[in-house]
Length: 194
Image 1: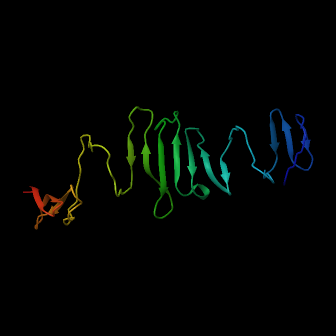
Image 2: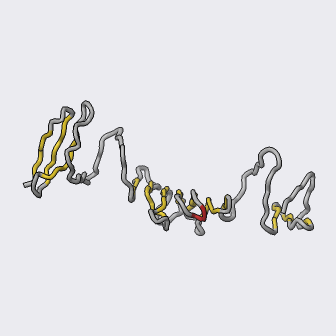
Image 3: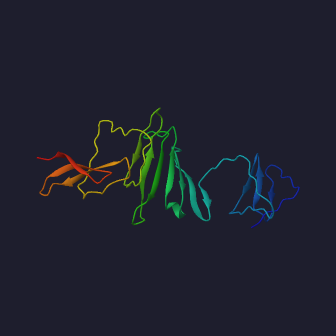
């Protein structure tokens, strides 16, 4: 179905025969699935209210939760693929937060990879099922009462100038030592399990 209106005014309650369109106070209602397009230029839609899911290319990409507590933006078809979830201030369990999800290996469900909290002056960012590579810190590493855990490994070799690499190494038996390798390849065992 297509609709072409040129210089036409609709009266309240007026229906257009064959087009399945009717006008009501402040609304133009399409009575069946309809495509709206423009043959030239851009189609401009002023501010509007989205009363349901927004579907693009036969897939749901923008979905508002039924209780209005969060909105999902999907990157794949039929609510599959990665998505960003923005939780509203009225979300009772996690207000004003943002979460990022990607698919699992089986592509059967999404896993929350990053959550940034809200409703606080300083918020918590939580990572899940993520391995980080190449992280460069621009400030001090504050473990906030927690610890850094190192797995045993072979000596990593010397780093660049003005660096030292700290690692856990097996002591030749069953115990673990803490070692450092300096930029000149010197290795120092500075803590040994006994």
